[in-house]
Amino acid sequence: KAGVTQTPRYLIKTRGQQVTLSCSPISGHRSVSWYQQTPGQGLQFLFEYFSETQRNKGNFPGRFSGRQFSNSRSEMNVSTLELGDSALYLCASSLYQGHAPTEAFFGQGTRLTVV
Amino acid sequence: GENVEQHPSTLSVQEGDSAVIKCTYSDSASNYFPWYKQELGKGPQLIIDIRSNVGEKKDQRIAVTLNKTAKHFSLHITETQPEDSAVYFCAASGDGLNSGGSNYKLTFGKGTLLTVNP
Image (cartoon, rainbow over all chains, first blue to last red; front, side, top):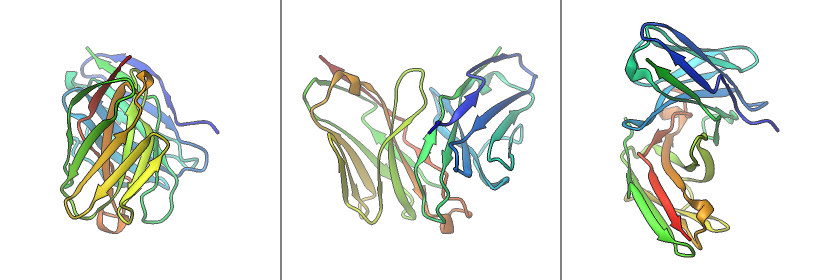
């Protein structure tokens, strides 16, 4: 069974640009979450999507957005990039089983560098 | 919101020794506690998890304990090996009924860099 696939693995962007990252969850998993990982702040929750709907959002500015498609694949977008957006962006997929939390499996991440 | 504290931030042990990492959480509604191992250049890998209706769970050399009253949980690795060297993260998650309908929001500790010396 294929794991969580994130593309691209590495990105270099200039301040002010925008970027789109992609995540393909494990087959059958309908929940996709995004996290930002930095040395200073650690792993921080960005948002979670289920059935094309955003169910929860972390404390990030509106420049960070996402969406989920009918096949559960998800994208996140960061507009007007700032130097502080440089981070490893991780996607996690989970099998929906009602309200009880289930295991979250992470992809390899996309390393974004803003220059 | 939930806050997870993790200690120690670094841990160095000799091969064959045991390693213990401890975490505390603040939200009594949290009921799911996974542990992740992250190696350099890779995403976090789920190694074990525990739910609030269980006090202890073991999987070969890895065990996790949970004390709901004290709101803390711990990871125990026995007979450590050099390949156990990595950063370990604890996390907590709540039930969907009490977290805006989403039970897939993990709050992570800051991580523990474990080094196992041969």
